Image 1 (tube, rainbow, N blue to C red):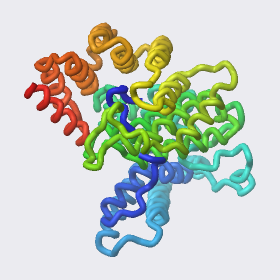
Image 2 (image 1 turned 45 degrees about the vertical axis):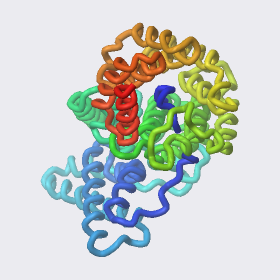
Image 3 (image 1 turned 180 degrees about the horizontal axis):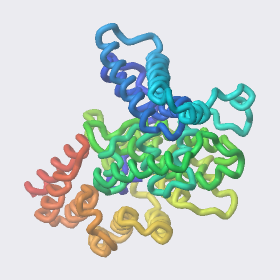
Length: 439
């Protein structure tokens, strides 16, 4: 998850009970139900028509906004949007067929590639994935698609992320992400990938991509990449729901799946104390641990035990272990930073990324002091990749502040503020910059 200095986490993610304004409700459905809607549409129009499914879903959302603003919100908004989207998709398919009226071979191709409704026996089969969103996620993570492209496609098609949000998640540019999406969709069309889900162990090759997409989905909810809300709990809830569904499926019931679910639950348990009553960001050492959700912590620890079965060790095991260290410490002072640092050392050996190294530097600072933390930051390989990420400068600012290097702290907080995109983070950085400047 995020750097420990920013590791402030709301109770089990719960869906908002209602949205008074139609625009807010449409935004909620766009964020929360994109995967389900796209999954249902792709079952109808075929995987080769992913772009058509996206366009139809977007048009359905726009029609919902216009119609609900004038006539009020229907009793079942989800069903309303789904019905409109499916009708639009059928109209689009009919238009395709009419356009090719003199091309019987093409008509036959369209008819045979549009999936038929699944028989009831197949839907109720114990080895079938019964959720369109999860089914679509496995389609996005087909082995013929490159691993990084799998996650990007899943975040776009399944989770409704904007190109900008995906670019920030990958520390990349929007143009590069847009090109990758275009190439991936073209590859799907050229390869004629189907919508069917292989059973049993045949699903295993796709599992890493699925877990990667779920991890990034939860991360975006845990710390939004832009906007006024630090937390987007509906995304965290969807990630937990999908991961829970995954571990119930025989092919997904693996140690690393349990480890990822443990990480999500242990992180979500700390949400209630991540911001104060005014919405201001709280550092980990300032949080009221009595507000942490003990039921989620217990569930997370149960899944962590399940993850320990066998000899597999993944990055999710190590991150869940770090989260468990925080959740089981009576207070901040009793946190086992030595164990956390060992986990980060192993995680960096497994996944040597600048972000992991930055997290490790924070653990070094808590264990050996802020000067040691600054030296660890300075030694990060490929540190230049983090220069455009506000967390690097926020961490450096915090370490200088602890060393009473107030001028250097103010400069770092000022740079972090220029790069931050989320309201509560901007308020926190502004406060720290002003405090450092005054000191």
